[in-house]
Every structure is written in C-alpha cells, then in structure tokens.
Length: 236
Image (tube, rainbow, N blue to C red; front, side):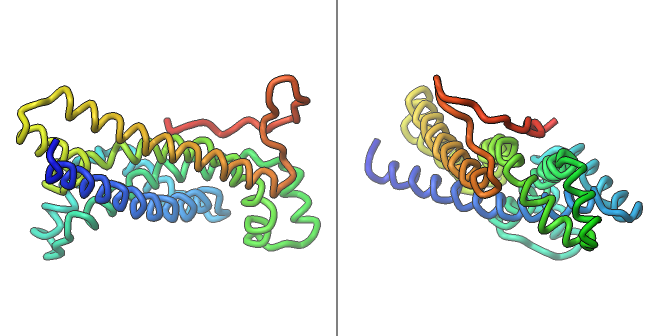
C-alpha cells in the first residue's frame, strides 16, 4: 500500500481506539451504577435498574446507533457528531451487560462478610464501599475483559453511519486497491493485536487487584495452588 493509504488506516485505528476508550468509560460507569442499583434495598430502584438492563440487552446495538444518530435529531433536535453518537449507543448497550456482571459479583461475596458489616453498624453504603466492592471487583475483571473485547468488535458497527473507524478506512482502502483478501487480512490482524493488548492489560489488572485483597493469582505449573473463588461468568 502507498503511504497515503497507510495514513488512512492509521487514522482509522486512532478513531477506533478513541471510540473504544470513551465507550468503555461510559459503559463502566453505567455498569457500576446500574449493577449496584440491582442490589438496592428499594424495590422501585431494583425494578428501574432491571428495566434498563432488560431494554438495552434486548435491543440491537446497531439499531441503537442508528436511533441515536438519525432519530434523535428528528425528534428532539439534538444532532450528535458520529463519535459521540457511537459512544453513547455502545456505552449504554454494553453497560447493561456489564451491570449484570457487577450484580453477580456482588451477590457472590460471602454472606458472612455482609453480616460482619452489619455487626459493625456500617450503613448499606459503607458495607458496599468498604466490604463488598473491594472483594467483588477482582472477580469482575475476567468477564469485563471478555466484554471489553466484544466492545472492541462492536465499534466496527459505527462504520455503517460513515464514521472513519478502522473498518470504514479498511473498506476505503479495499475499494482503492481492488484487493479484498490482503486488506481484510491486515484489518483482522490489527483487531487481533488490539484485543491481545487489552487482554494482557486486564490480566495484569486482575493480578494487582487480587493481590490487594490477599488473593494470590493462579499458580504456575508445579507450584502450590491457592483456593480461588469462581468468577461470575461472561455475558449471557
């Protein structure tokens, strides 16, 4: 490929990375707020949180992108640029899946820990902040890692509204060169490299968080293994 076409691909990679970071931050915020709300004492709060997860898990991320980008301007006069429309749609959609990860991890904490917080006269928020979340967060990392990879692959959907991400740029290069196999092989490899780096980073974060709460990471071959709490599982 010529330098100009490579520059187009590099701009697409940068756009994809930006979209991934912004969507992941929004999705994480939504996941923790809604996931914690799913464990709230108030039935009304739990119902609203469950309604949110049901709606956003039951709708297509692609249609949500189209709805935010094309319908909002017609209905409310709010025209979002493609980057923020994609961020909002992906963050809200994948945040709903993340909320179930958060809820499951909190529910998996040993009930004795909750009882200890009650015995110490902690408020519900203190129990959540000081006891439950520090133990639940390390168990969220493996399923969150899977969800982050799914989010990376989901960023390609924004190419359908003309946003110059990696998938869109790769398609332009394909049309320019009239060569599908080579270009799409490059694009596959680029997505794989990004996913690999994300996976390694999340594994490092998991080890650090587990060490912070006194849990040893999985031992290597021939070494003594420590008891390990089973993760909460991936996205359904």
